[in-house]
Length: 560
Image: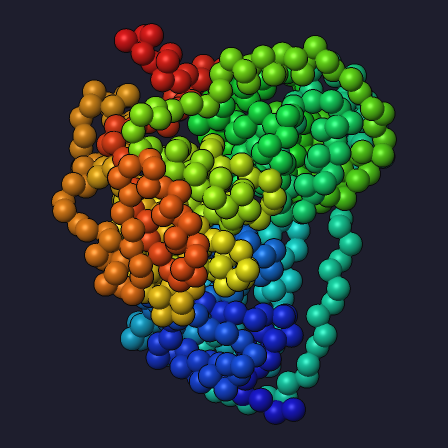
């Protein structure tokens, strides 16, 4: 059939099963928006308040559903406003397809109005970027974009289309989406035999789970491996929910704000098994002193990650779920009672704790866990509240914790929460933000109000940039350079002005009822929680120090 480029874009999205697009229109992409209008009964468009919000919403939709998220923007500033969201998705291996339109082909390269080489701009932060200049290349390019985004180690792909291509006409032939290719594993028989032997010889094994376990849907296989090895399990920020946070084997997060049980346990183990993790600097601290007494096994789909940050003793390259299914069949049931007793000793001796005499973020998160029975989808922005939310909510299922781990993007959470709620309309979706982060994305409350998307926005307000202030307190002699935000902004009035319900909480006993009310309203609600300005996230490892040097508030008080 004969279709113009804009109609081909829509037909290709329908081929790929896309039901929602997040975006913001403009001049060069008007043809595509006109076609989208004609198909509004098949593809829902969410008009965000800013293009960065659209990128984060597509990212949150992808994380929460496992599907490819889609966002759209016009040329020039519309396209460049997507960049931070694209980089966020790239760092965390999230499948997103960004579709932009550019000026007409004859105007390219002439500094035309709102012309930007967006395909070139995003080249380092995408799996691939395309610019389509010929109508007969359009359909195949969009199909390639989706295949690249979801295959192997997932990630974002950008497709830029010149405006004349969106208007040109060509023959369109529908193509059925191929079934996903088999999960590829690139290890040899001798390699998996070596790994299985190491596992069976270990006396103090420890599993370290990364975000790859969620991407590959390997949670059941990770749990099975932990039982076979009779060993403890820690996770990264990106892996929350990949392993049951209420399991007796679970020791908490590892790394800069990981638990003492995880950090000290990994430092004592004789075999560390890294599953879908990349040994980031926030996890390993000083690489020369990370798990010094242990042999290390690394299983990952991306060969570039093997020996990149930490030298390992054995590795398997392949999809984590398929690899563990193969590996688990080769392992006999192990028993390590003394090692598990030592781990339980660490957990008992060094529990997470906080001052419960005043309203605090940990208490807010524990109440959120109680009210939602641990079944909400939680997104966060970046800072102290992010770490507290990772530490104190009991994640039991994958795809229920959405956070910018690699890029650390302030302003990520609210857009991501909107995307998650659109993708999972029957779930409770909550974003936990700091007051500094909320200033960067508060305009997206208008998006939630416009479509009555019932997200709950929790603003942990301490009137400072909390994480930066914590570092200034501990390492910069309490010189609070540009981290005080006490300027009288009333977040509740802002939320109400943007069409949302607002609740301010100042006492612990007000928290639970506030959550219950927000859930019952089934509309966008902001809950502002006022906490002390000098609350700190503990435990903590100073940047560049070994994770074995983890300290908490008690240690700090003893030193002083």
